[in-house]
Every structure is written in structure tokens, then in C-alpha cells.
Image (cartoon, rainbow, N blue to C red; front, side, top):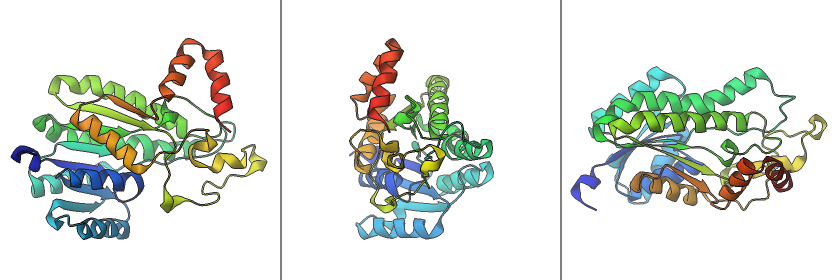
Length: 275
């Protein structure tokens, strides 16, 4: 790695646990200097301790307690990052929240909260970081979901919010291209997260018409679960190879193509693969 790469920096929103932690770890291993945004101070402290225990220089990582849906705290966090590291090359938006339920039973205020977590957080961080990213001709990577391309049953408002994130990312990519800023999207399927495995973390209740298997990762979709490290590798592909989108697992692209060309067949296959 050359001297210029040694001083590259990144901001990761939601980088203190799960997929975000894996992405943070990978960036640090690639010699990036990283600022991690999160709402839980204790979790951020634990993450930083884990990283420094792995021989990561404490000066290489900065944490900031910040609600990524609010512009002023994000502006302050970006200003602190620039004061500390002097440049910004990469923004990775990981903040998000899943859901379970039916559209019939979806509360509008609950859907707005899902939009805040999955869309507004990314929008706010992008707007705060773009001036610095234009200077470095850097990269934005948004963490989407397979649910942002296909809409299986019983994911409540999650698929709606992730479809919106895909649309925002695609528009942003075209808008940023003249300034040399690359915009990538990683759309993973179900991810195994040992820190968040509970019998029913979404409060699924069959009386509401949602089967209990929908409480499983991916809403019970018959797709092999991914590791957080696989998602982190995909993020690095977006950064280093300037890939516009990485879908995991890759074979699900066939389902998307079938659904686009033969909607009835696509619906039949999707129904067979989900709860």
C-alpha cells in the first residue's frame, strides 16, 4: 500500500456492531483512518476497545455519539473528522432497521420511523459529507438489502424503506458522477448476527397473520445466510473497484431478471422462497 493510501479516511454510520463493525474492522485493516458514528456510547467504547486490542493504533479510529437522522449532529461529527484527519475518502451508510408484519397492519408512524432509520439517516450523512467527498473524488456506499429489489411477504415496512434507499442511491450516483464521486450499493440477503439472535426479536404474533418463521433472518426466506465479513468484502469491492452495486448472494440476480421479464413466474418463485 502506497503512502497516499495510508492516509485515506472513512466515516461509517452505524459501525459499532454487526455488519457495521465488520466494515469498520476491514477499513482499519486496509489502513484507513475511521470515524464511527453511533447512538450508543457504551457500544462505541466497546468497539474501540476491541479494535485497539487487535493492534490497531488508537489514533487510527475516532468515535462520535450521534443520531445519524439529525443534520446538525452529523455536521458536527464530519467537522470533527476533518479536524482530526484532514480529509474524507469514503462514507459507508450502515444504519438501518428491519421489520416484520403485513401491509394491512402497517402503522403510518411506524413506517415513518423505518424511513428515518433506513433512508433519512443515509440522506443526512450524504449531504453532510458530499463537499469533502467531492474534494477527494471519494466513494459513498449504502447498505441496502435484497428486500430493496424484491418484496417478500411479512417484512412490514422494511421492503418499502429499502426500495426507497435503492431509488435514492441510483439517483445520487448519476448526480455525483460529474464530480468524480462514486456511489455504490451493497444489497445483501439475510445476515447471521450472533449478537442479535433471539427467538422472536420482532415480536411476531401469528394472530396478526404473520407466521412464526417470518421472525427468522430475511423473514424466513429460503436463502443461505451471509456473514458480516462477506458484506464487508462487498463494500471494499465498491470502494476499490468502484462497483455500482453488489448483490449477495449473486444468484438472486436471476430472480430479479425473471421477475422483470415474467412477473407471474417471478411471483411464483418468490412465494416459494419465502414464508
